[in-house]
Image: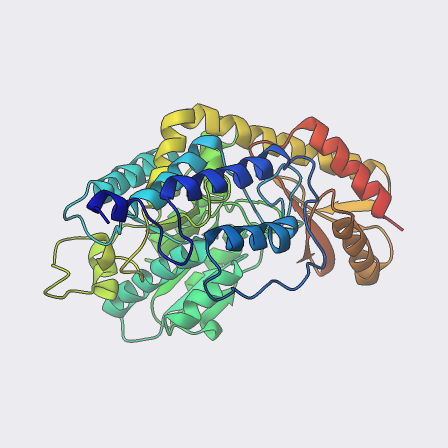
Length: 450
């Protein structure tokens, strides 16, 4: 076999060429994408998946996948999937992600490839678009959970230099990943101090936060602020919160997993006033940027402390200020390139167009279901999330409704809990969702109610 033939082969029985494999994958991918607007959005329940056979060859393996896996893949990148906060994928992001897999770069260090510098410049470009301080240092990670972990770990290192007393975290509406980060880092879940929120909202009450920090005498404090709270999309008053943190010498962490993209819409951007004063910031890109999973950025103002936590110096790894020294991962894929491509292709204006459209559709959805008299929207609709509940029947009615809705396959939503009431959450974050999709979603809701 010649060197060229070696390069052109796939390992395993009945391999074939890279071109053959990619052509076959392309056919499956285009079939999925072309029909995604009319597919069942979710499959409840899906059948048991096949175990991977032992070396049946590429053609047979792909045939098995096409028969036993592909038909039950969800249409989560499609326009009517409203569960969690889930983006789709734009054409340029998908093309970039395929190239990322082709290039197979390990962005653990800067030696020998331009990939790490592309990441550095991409992080800086998004930081500027979000309105972060130019001194903020960012690194790509797998998602907002990992980003919150990086930021809380860095804050813990900061706290250790302030006092030997334990760190306390204050928040009005902390995401569950903050508690996970506190547990992993050894801060402990019990060190979270919930702060009252404003009446009828999920945004923290600044007066309550001021009072909580004023009476706190148990060591360093971290304040977790929400820029897009997960139940309603509400924003803490970041400017006031940052001023309070400055007075009380507290570390300000802003969890902006999806809400930071409000910066791309001129009407929403003022909600991020004060973000420039944050000590650390989390943002997910596989949500509202609509790049493939998994992709997020953790920003901190103290990369020196971040490196103290995550440094993995070794003779064979080198000791440059490489990406591996700033996150839990050493080896990782070239996540920055799809984000680079979307920003380069669409620009902040293009991204802002779908952010604004999603928010308008969320409001229209809330108005449509409220008008039926069968549902109540809770917490308002400040961004792209609608939390609603049946007007009668409580948790039992909510569960029956959600089961019927999701089983119908027209749309998919997730359960929630807000102000002590069971809710259904609809999150509009897909770049392709249209008014026609909204009509189908509203019809599906109407058909699923008791």
